[in-house]
Each structure stands twice: as C-alpha cells, then as structure tokens.
Picture 1 (spheres, helix red, strand yellow):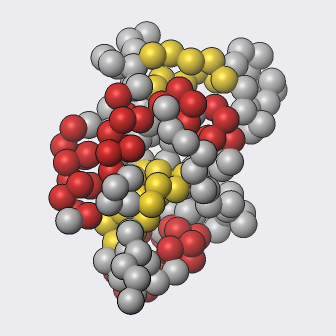
Picture 2 (tube, helix red, strand yellow; picture 1 turned 180 degrees about the vertical axis):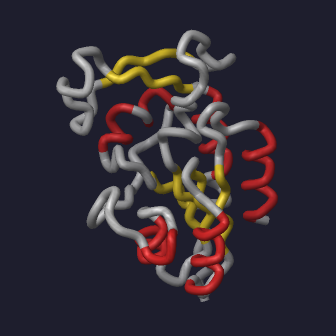
Length: 172
C-alpha cells in the first residue's frame, strides 16, 4: 500500500502576509510588495494591495515539502502561484478552487472549513489559516476520517518558528 503524505493547506493572508500588523510598521524580516490580483478592484483602493512577505518562509515551506504535499488554501486561489509563490521561491502548487467564497457555513464554522474537508477527502492534513476557531476543529474532528491539524495563525504576526516546528513535529 502506497503511503501518501499529508496535505499542508496554506492560507496567504494572515499566515504568510501578516496584513493586520500595524500599518506603519512592517514586521521584522518582511518585505513590502504591491500587487494587483484579480480580486483587488480599483473601487476598493486606487493603490495596489500591500502584501508583506518573509522570504525565509519559502525555504521553511520547501523543507516541509519532504513531509507534506503543499497546497494553496487561499482566496488568491491559483493567483497565489503568480503573485506569492515566486517571491518565496516556491514552485507552482495545486490550489483549492473554492466552489463559493465567503458563503454560508455549517454550524458556525469558517466558510472554508467544509471545502477543506471535501478537498482532503480521506487524507491526513494540516491547515494554516488566521480564521480557524474551535468550532472548525470540532467540525473536522467529527467529520474527517483521518488525522487533521487546524492551526490558527495570528494575522498580526504571521508564521513563526514555533509554527514551523509544530508542523514538522505533527508530520512525524
């Protein structure tokens, strides 16, 4: 029987882009990028979207690729491969193509949760996102047939060394 690596489902805004950090103070180790993904319309702001990225995160994620299959789990969808991945030195990754974004969700869960479970199928997965709550963990625990790690990442801080260590430890 072939052993399949668990999925590592990666959100962009929050984990990789600590968008909620103080606007006047870029987090240490991060670089400012200006981007115009499809979802960013001039009606919201005539300026491009400000995205903070830590280039070390690319190497950290690639190191985890020995233990995980990396997948974008972001509203950026495939555009994460064009706008985010190249800045982090990541190859093109598969992505979850959300059937509906920001829609209704069962039992007080985050709207992505039902689709994350659907995408994972029967596979083990770790999911990093800034909108995960205890309701999402309970929902996954009750409905997902394999191990699952749902890690809430603080959108003011982004991924940290302990987060990468926890992901590596969980995969073992």
